[in-house]
Image 1 (cartoon, one colour):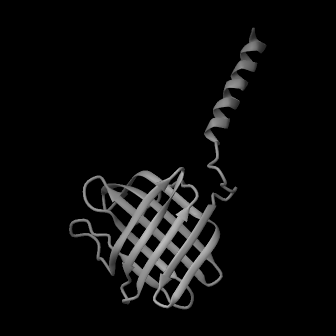
Image 2 (cartoon, helix red, strand yellow; image 1 turned 120 degrees about the vertical axis):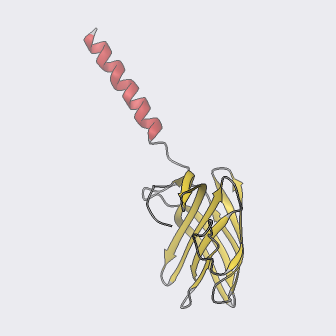
Image 3 (tube, one colour; image 1 turned 60 degrees about the vertical axis):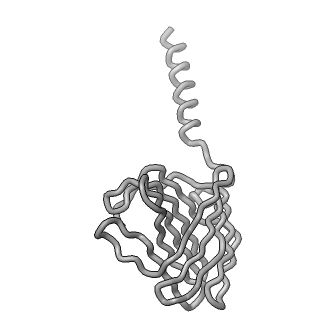
Length: 166
């Protein structure tokens, strides 16, 4: 009876462990997923197809306001993109975008909660969910006046890791 109990416990633990480690389709060991970026910033193009980090937190906080959060981080060579979309329970979506399509860097920050936050630039980011991922559509003007438009498609979103900040 003791051996049967031990075998059953190991079997259950293996089943639970396997479920807890279920991977998002196409996710690599480092948490990166397939991403396609097609953004124009003035005369500069930022085109990328490969792997990047795409995360989602159904419950997050921005300036002590509960909000859903999506984040994309991609960098390679001299190019980089960091996009965070915040969706508060009440109120309009807010986002931050840092884009370096080459030698220039453009930033947009529409985060404002009460007296907290100093928006720089303006625009919108919408998210169209697709399976376990989604496509962000960006239409913005950076703090330096550069017009930014395009899409970022994440093949999947992985769980965000909690951290302090904004």
